[in-house]
Length: 227
Image (cartoon, rainbow, N blue to C red; front, side, top):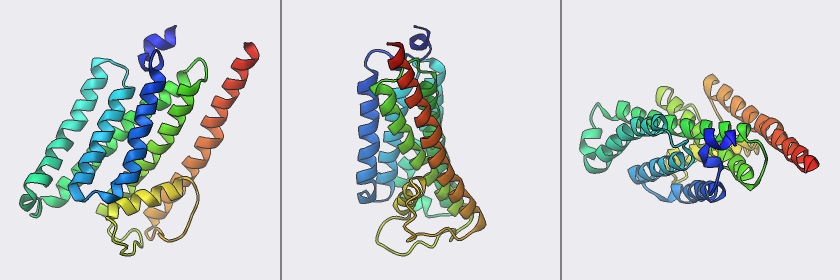
């Protein structure tokens, strides 16, 4: 099948691969707030790399992209873990921004491939359903990084009260609350940019369910009628 030649991940053990990605993402959601500082960032980066590796198209180009994005982030995290005194100097803010941007790029790369695979699929099965869930979770992580990057350029963009959690974990929580349009109101975007990004994320969450999920359901129904 042409689809399997173009996207090998959709053939053979695809369901197990998507399940593995889902397990990594859910585990990260559960344990991310419990991990301190750079350890949490290292675990997050590991999860991103594993997720991207599991859904890659097996081409040298894809592996090269993963390595180009991952190697600098790994070096920066290693500096933060073993040479924290250096990162307390003037270089800390730009290096922290670089870590965030490289991690964000890895997430986008992983998410784009999953979305392409879902749209290109010739039939809807359990693999596509798992892929839909994975991409939704990845969207939440992507927006958490977007908010974190914004706060580096515009401090105090959010009215985050001191709760004992790391700021990154708080933004991750805020991202998923926004993506699912729960809107608890315990965290509020203050700057205009933060407010507009929050609105866009809420719209993305709604349109994803209304368009992508509805599209897959229609494909599923069409396939069953043909059978």
